[in-house]
Length: 148
Image (cartoon, rainbow, N blue to C red):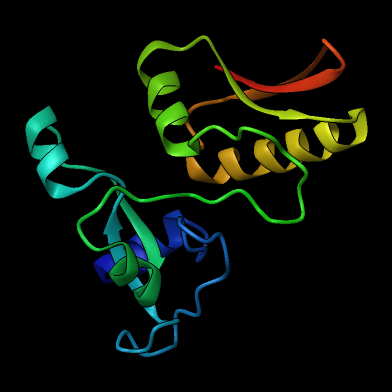
């Protein structure tokens, strides 16, 4: 089994950046083809004394981010205000545990939808984290949090 196949199986053949399916049979030269990416940049991994975690990405998603820190976007269909940077929050939770406020929402329905999406996305992004989502009401808004 090739390294690409191992990483693809580990990630369920889903791009860790855009969360869309990756076709294992597509050419690695195609923008939608599979590639191996590092969760952190090589410079940051070297600074931390770590190897960086290998993840599956579309060639276009991987090339698009270049040597910059990756961004895991919030979907446009969710109504969230002041959304947190997902990878930064996940990295803090992996190091320290605790609670991270991820977004504010105007209604309970919006918050529940955001919490459901976030739990599903974090489950694939950092499966070992075991994070749960919480929705708290306060000040006429709803806070969506991650707890690990």
